[in-house]
Image 1 (cartoon, rainbow, N blue to C red):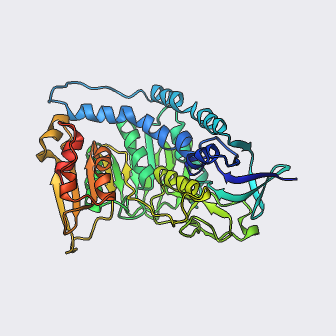
Image 2: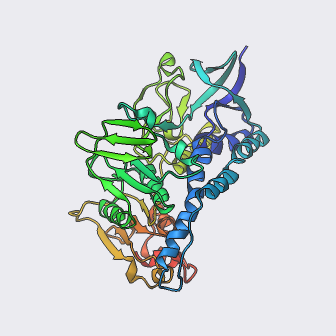
Image 3: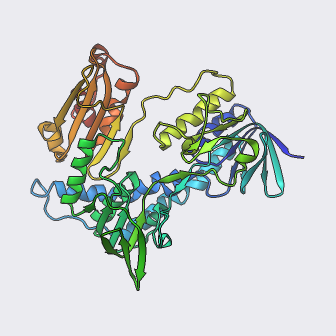
Length: 440
């Protein structure tokens, strides 16, 4: 007989544990099925690992900005020591997250879960049933479908590099491609970025993206646009990435051409869950095409950014739904995005087209802000969009502290603060927060 739960989760990442823990704490019998590391991608081979490796990179670039302005000479990055630090930071996270779930009363089930029916999952020889099942299996790296694709590496491999190759070629100009190219470049590798089209980071304000690419080129990044790889070949220790009319010789290839939802081998077809290449289709209550089966996190096909904060929000929404706190449809808040390059690129809200007449768009040069001069963060730009009542509706920034700027402005966008309401917010001075508010 199957063990009975109130709610079962497939996967243990942020799309699960940020909701499963409070759900169990409120008395629900909750089970979490995981075939890999507890915590999913973000803590183990995503955000946490990336930002740990990036810290020396950011510091080195900040020191470079101060050359001739109070500093001479500069640090060099020891990648092996950086890698060991990253491991020390993240290796304990799976046990920590597992401990938090178990302390709340969540049952952890290790193995691969597959649907038997809409309320039953099989893991090995055991079956588990629940009134509600949440699919939160996340995504995995996409692989190029070209000869020699097995010679390329994915983001997981990059995060496990104990030493950096001398020459690295990155295929793809999204978040992962640009962030990892920036890290390797600053750490001393010769890096070539191959863009399959003419635009990078399509979801970001393109004038700022172009300025970011120009800045990275000034730092030494080689960029080739409209470059479609057709094969990867190996000769001895050397790799060659080929297109129809060009080739790049390198030591290591990163395939950063995107991520795909983990929908295979779950038995979704058996119970009739609808999904596409973009992910699982859900309604405005995050329920799939099968009653009682829900989805959360990056496995969902959605227009919202597939980011950790989005997964957390969805997981917490399901907790409120399952406990009866709400029966309302999910209402996504303003969700910011950031690219952790040097400089950073961050954005929230929709940036209008140049001919939009119903909004006000103000673009500022950071070098004109006295506070940015104190930190030598003078290479970037800031953009704010306000409506006819001077309420902030979108913002973007290219700069070393862009992530903090956009975080500071989030409440103004989410709560549609009027100028009079914004005046009631007294910030620390001098600070990036004070500077951010003054840009509106």
